[in-house]
Image 1 (cartoon, rainbow, N blue to C red):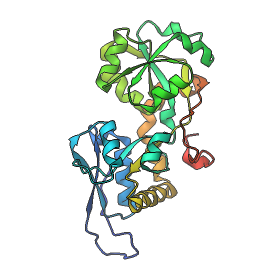
Image 2 (image 1 turned 120 degrees about the vertical axis):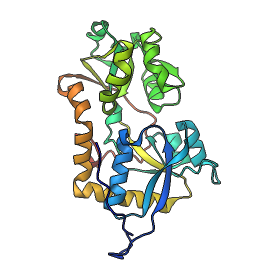
Image 3 (image 1 turned 30 degrees about the horizontal axis):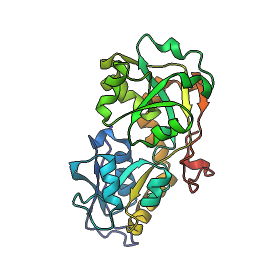
Image 4 (image 1 turned 135 degrees about the horizontal axis):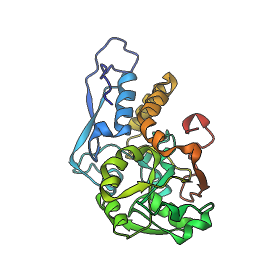
Length: 282
């Protein structure tokens, strides 16, 4: 999806005055045009007339390094000012979150990639206890790994995203849970080449949110990001963009046909705005 850029105007009540663009350096992970959060934030900044322009970090950095750089009391060598990632208590202690879930909580709705021909192994799973005979693979520093483990599930961990699908193919784990928004791209590019398929019956669900995070010293930046995201939400463009972007994945997972197994998230910060229904996927 390509979104048309709009002129960036200074949002300080000076209508018609052209603002001098200012780079906002985010942690570069991959192709930004394949990243919903990048596209959403770019649109939010542009529509709200913010002078901020998303600019990738010079190097591709891991989540762990980007989080450490942002938490450092002085500016880091990477110059990173922003990362979007899943929240937990530790991250909110060390960094400043913008508590508007960019994913509407959908990354806490998890479906399973499994080896082709082994889908029937999961057919009898109807409650959490039924999942404890399986092993699940996750990234070593993902909050999801800790959430699954806290629910009594057996979790294997990998240090690199590229290793996850081959590890399941090599029987290092029984299943790889992935967020619903990730399914369409990963099924074609990562799962199918490794002989993995989408398990058709189950949906694991726990409350979580994918937020923007900035340095605790950058409260003005957090306020500007919140202003722009709320303006996008109020216009209706936030939900339209989300539904359009996630439509292929939602069509593949067929949520109404799945059995939901609820998991608890003991690492969810108490400040998470779960009571605001407008922020969450329905």
